[in-house]
Image (tube, rainbow, N blue to C red; front, side, top):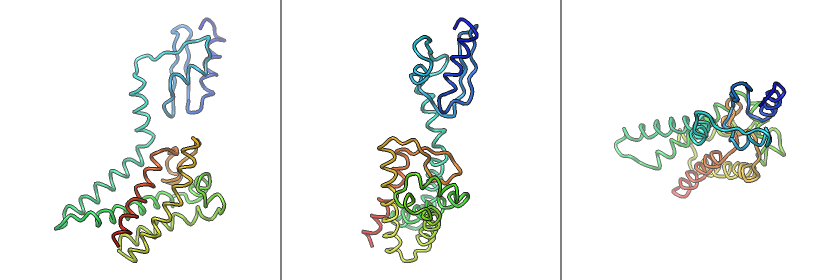
Length: 227
């Protein structure tokens, strides 16, 4: 960069990228300090500023930054899974005998209760996000308002052992329907918000979402077969 217009051009080009919150460019130091909401690859930054300028990393390892960004993005849902897994394993460990079926039942109950709680914190926001990809919510707007209460009911039924076979059958059906829209969005690489934790956290739709649904489908199917 040789002049103020160069600084301005580089700065404006970088600020146009989604996910960049601020840019400080210096022609004297020949550097740019970029603040990002999520990790953006150097190749993307280079493409934004064109071939006239070259951008290179200074004092950071890109793969480490990417891993850090991934953890920062998915930290809420990962911590919830760790919390639920640890708690339910501890409950089972203090029993006279460790029963995997009972643990799965408790894990699923906690999963639906916790996830329904976050959805109900902002029901309107969840419904709007859910309608972006769910196959039922796209056609019936009220489904987004009903779904968190269904999750709550499933969680309570699993926790109390009420109508176990019916509850697991409903769980399996609900999660199978849910995963269709998730798969479509991920495979089509649509950059939309995942509504699994409602509107509280800004989680992108990804393979993490598929794994969540697939886990519930697997557990629900296993418990249904056992009944």
